[in-house]
Amino acid sequence: MGSHDGLLKTLEFKLKSFVINHQQLQFENKQLKQELEEKTKEIGILQNQQKDFEERLKLTQIAKTIEKKQDITKIKRDINELVREIDKSISWLNKVENNE
Image (cartoon, rainbow, N blue to C red; front, side, top):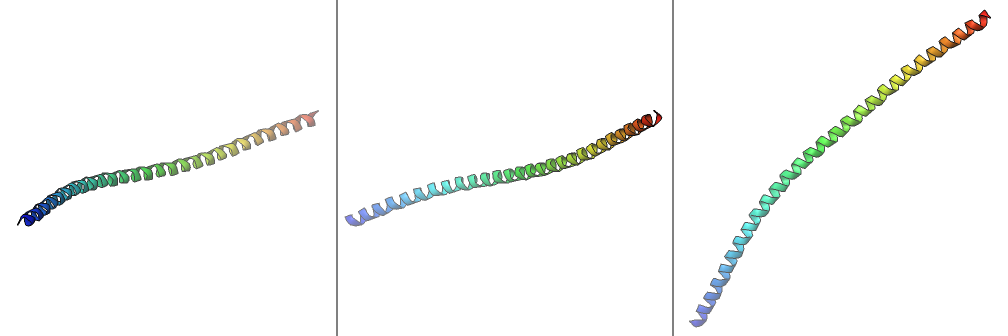
């Protein structure tokens, strides 16, 4: 019977060790699941921020393009105005030459 008692005690010790180890693993698993959930939420937030930044970048690029087009239009108007002034000056010079 002594050997049975020894086997029983060994089995009992191993079973207790197994139960303790199982509980520790369950606790660790629960913590890891919580951490995973937090990281998943964080990733979602960061993805939304990235989309916002990309949208802002697109809008900024569009605004710059529009601004450049407006600048080109203004430059064309200014050039046309200068050409008109030059034409007036040439016309005036021609009149002055003809009167002499």
